[in-house]
Image (tube, rainbow, N blue to C red):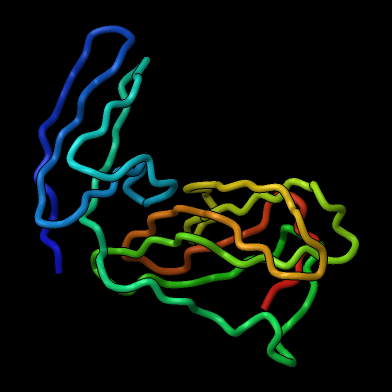
Length: 171
């Protein structure tokens, strides 16, 4: 288990870049919220442009291996179509170092025109958006791998929700 990173604060008066630094015994992952979200960068420093007081958060890389979760989309009896953003996948993160969600497989339905935008949101248990990722469909009724690049810390009842063009096949 990686130990928490040690940070060095920074300040600036006025608009401009600020160099934030941290050290640790694993790869460091920078995110905009203590609840996770879109990965801003990885490494020992992050240089954002700031225009107001802003907090950034750094976590030690959760490590481990890349794992696929969930049934294959072709498994009989596990497929349905969703045409509403009212539905979402719910999950818990039980590892204290958190997890990275690199990609998700989506299956645009035969009614979804090729070239349609799709947005997937990572939400906390109250439905607050922690991060979003978007792509354009390039297939119908077949698997399309979508890059998410989300970091999710230890916690319960996170949501993955299709918030734009939810006419997708899901499991």
